[in-house]
Structures are given as structure tokens and as C-alpha cells.
Amino acid sequence: MRVCMPLIASLAVALSSQASADPFNDLTKGGGDACFQRVYDAAHLAKNPRQRVTSMTLWINGSPKASGNVALALTRRNDPQAIFLAAGCDWEEYKPGQKSWMTVFKKRAGAGCITLAVPDVFEASSAEEGGGVILDPAPDGKSLTVYLDDSQSMVKRANRSKPVSLELGADDRVFLLRRTDLKNCAAAKEAITEPEPGVKRR
Image (cartoon, rainbow, N blue to C red):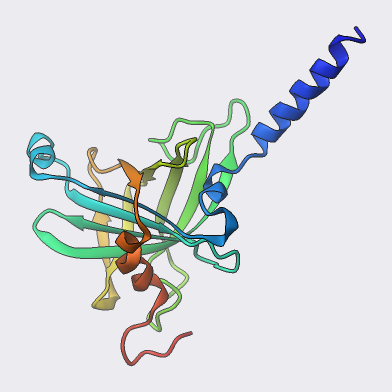
């Protein structure tokens, strides 16, 4: 029994460390930002005619002072102009028997996000919730899966005062994004951090 006790203690510490891990915040350790993206080619879209989303970009703000730490941008068929949302995300772990609040998400842990209809940096913004998102980063941090709720309220960069209601079909709920250079997230970052020309920063 004396021989086993150190092993049991070590195992308990290891399990506790795993349970308290936060893979979402690990993506931006050291205060650096992270960028994930997926652009679907014509062949993929032809094989999946019911998928409306043609590209998706996710920027994660590494600043600990950020209230909304995520920007998501996407384009759709027949509309190349991107639409955006801002979100605040926190890592969540579900207890045994507890289910996720999002039907399409079946895992035990993920980063749950409350999205805003319009980012707070804009004069036209409000506290109205735009929908829900769950982010599931891969253990190696090289990819991230985005789970979307039934609908999202988003905006176009050129007209923040008119939210766009994004209705999602069965083929527009789960997206696997790959980590990419931060320059690919420049538009998403700018969209939720910089006000329109002539609009004062809040």
C-alpha cells in the first residue's frame, strides 16, 4: 500500500491538471492572438449544394483586457461581402450526465460563446445577444471546430445599424478551421475593433 500511494497521488494530480486545463486560452498564451480559417473551393461546394457558407475566419484576441475576445467572419453563396459577429468565450466543462446547451455539440468540454448582434465598439451597438457559438480547439492547437446555433445575428462592415439574420441549415452548423497566419484575420479583427469612419470610439 505504501508503494501504491505515491502513484495514486501522482495520478490524482494528473487528472486534476487535465480537468482544469483550458485549451481555448492555451491558443493565445503569452498574449498573442490566434487566427483560424477555412475557404471552401468550388469542388467542395459542388459536392455540398446545401452548404451556404463559402468561407469562415475566426480571430481570437490574446489580450487579457478584452471583453469580447473573438471575432467571426463568414461569406455566403451569392454574397461575397463578409458578415461579422463579436463574442465573449469561456471554457466550460460539463459534469457527468450534464449535456451541452447546444444540440449539435456532443463533447464534455468546449469554449462557450455568447455573441453580440453588433460589437460594442460601434455607436449603433446594443447588448442584444446575437446567438450562441461553441469552439472546440484540437489538442495540438493547429485546428479548431466551430459549432453554430440555429441562427445568428451578424452585421456587414459597411452598415452596422442593420443586423443580418443568418438562418442556418443542417450543412451550416459545424466547421473545421485550420490555424493560419494572423494576416488572414486582419479584416475580422478590424471589423470588431475599429469604428466606422466618423464614428467615435466608445
